[in-house]
Amino acid sequence: MLSGKKVETNLRGGHMTEYDVRKLYEQQQEHDRITALHANHGVLTVHYADGTVEVYKKRKFLKGLKKIRSRNERIL
Image (cartoon, rainbow, N blue to C red; front, side, top):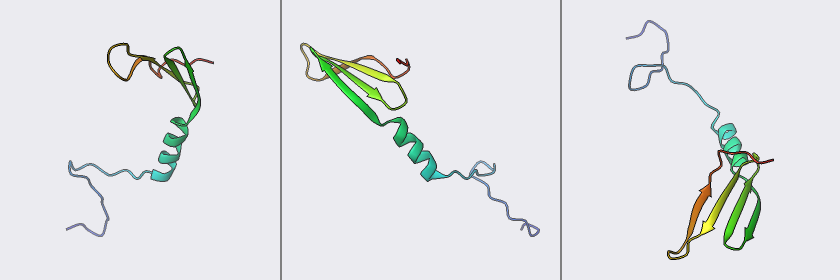
């Protein structure tokens, strides 16, 4: 028994941290918001609100798209 103190612990015995889930969700939604799409000769460019870009190229033999540039690079 505890001596009058309220202690919240997780399964490993550490203290739990409270997060504002709505704020985190809104930040993630804003980060992943698409601002522009550009398609030109089988190349699809996706521009996101945080300034990052993903580039996809149409496959010749298989159906679908292949990612040729990830969101790690910022293009201004």
